[in-house]
Each structure stands twice: as C-alpha cells, then as structure tokens.
Length: 81
Image (cartoon, rainbow, N blue to C red):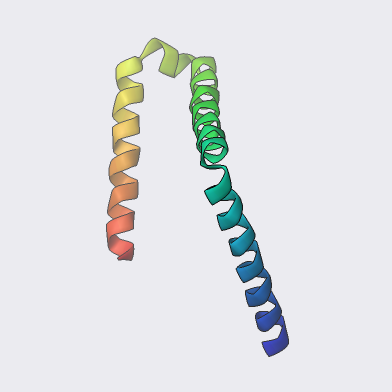
C-alpha cells in the first residue's frame, strides 16, 4: 500500500513539473485553450437550453432557475468550509 502511494505521489510530481514547464513556456497557448474550452462549454449549454421549449419560451424562468442553482451551490460550498 505504501509503495502504491509512493508511486502515485512520484508520478503526480512528475506530471506537475511537466505541466508547469509547458504552461510557463507557452502561456498564450494555455490561455487560448482555456478560453476555447470555456466558450465551447457555454455555447454547448446554450444550444442544449434552446432545445428545451420551456426555457426558450420563458427566459425569466431560466434566469430564476440559474440564480437558484447558484444560491444552492453557494450554500453547500459555505457548509463545506
């Protein structure tokens, strides 16, 4: 068991060094990749929401549900701390 944890810790450290090296060498590529991922996710959610007639017909309900979800997740987050 200790050998497995040691192996996992060593591999994580090696992956962190490689990731940090590339992130420092190519910050623009990482920034563009992160931006693309974020925008693609939002656009995907938008397309999924457009397919739900209830949300398409009632944008105020969509806004209210979004605020409610943020409130609930924020409450759970505060309880975890």
